Image 1 (cartoon, rainbow, N blue to C red):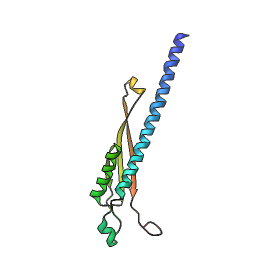
Image 2: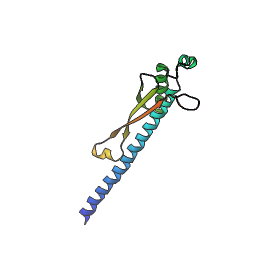
Image 3: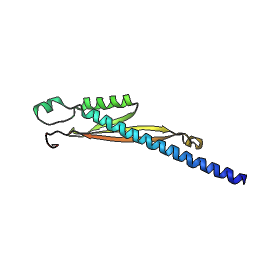
Image 4: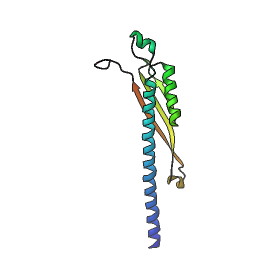
Length: 130
């Protein structure tokens, strides 16, 4: 009876550990997605004023957009990459990080990688996006 109880206890602790660390990784991934989306939105505010004022279209200023996105990532405590589409209207941010495990470190898994993705498209128009 004692051996059976010990085996069941170990199995139950393993299942609880997987649930806690799995939920923690899920929350960390959601946070990385949220940070990536907000960094993309911050980058989307950095438009090229010369093109916007002359009516040539709304495009991002590449240097200012990347600087804004990286500044947001630094303030949020994350690392990532920022890309801008060729037409300078689509900004994509990828955030990379790790989730330090609680229970899985007992079996040698000290951390799990986490990544988040976010994008923003520059739109303009009075009654509908153009």
